[in-house]
Figure (cartoon, rainbow, N blue to C red):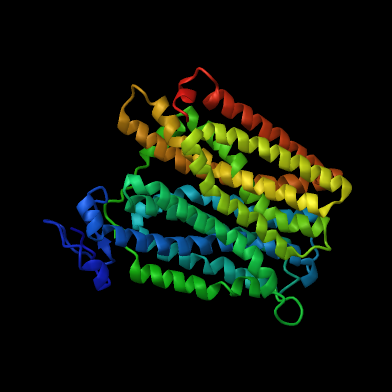
Length: 454
């Protein structure tokens, strides 16, 4: 029923006989893929899909590692001889998120054009560019800030990997298993941020002094391995077709922009706080080890599936409103901690923020198909489905821009007031507005959205 085309492992190829009319092609293309067919799925389709999922998670995980590298390298630059202002340091943290967010839509469209396997090989290999460039510049304190900024921007390649990985895996699984597969894929990738912030501080001081080049060189062999495994064991699906119309339909739908706005508050906050947290700790509590910073990204990543589970039970909008309320509490706690210089309260408040952003990531994504089903009542079902699919891509890209806005907010606050407090109050106001918008559009009593438990 499936025709893997080059020499696939016998255990995968044996149960999948070519369907009538299917033909083999070079490049591990599968020309007949029917995951909704129970016999096909049980006869080997599930095994092929899971193999591709595991390898996709590995490559995406490394993408997040590279995307987050500058978040943990920047606080160490002064000790390595670099003379940077606070504003410049936050620019180096923010730019990878800006580039990664911008790349998300083209990376999504690349999968149907080139094939999931082919694009995974390419996108994984591209991670060598920012890692090797970082290793080069951090050994040269005389490097100009402009060059540093360009090298930091290259880390955005890692941010684009998330979009292509999610798009690729969505084609492999049947609808009833797609949510779980995408959840594992997203969580596995997000963990890369936590791993970087745990491992890199240990690696760069493993010898005498601080060797910042090790921060990126340690990932080079894993990147090469990921590209090789994708080339050797992943598959392209000829059934995966690009549908640019989904984006055209989505941008005309108001719900796309409402949900994108909400996703800035959840996923954008997660990426933004993950990038800025090590620098915040180093600046506000220099006596504390930077290795603790990884806990924020870790709890945020682990909490993401919980958002989907809770949203399935009580509705994504209600969970999202609660998440914004908790984020307000966390931000106010951080403000109080800065006023009294209490590390314990500051750290705990940020962990609360990270958990709430993680749960909110899952709940907002859960809202998309439900909201478009309600909004699409009486319309063409295919157009509604295309709009929802396009919204996922647009919201993912727009939401990631929060990873740029939050570090820049901290930089402006520090430059103008000498403190982080003003930025945190702005975030409190933004979360309050987002909570009100969520309630008014999707959770207000007496509305079709509330009745459908969007």
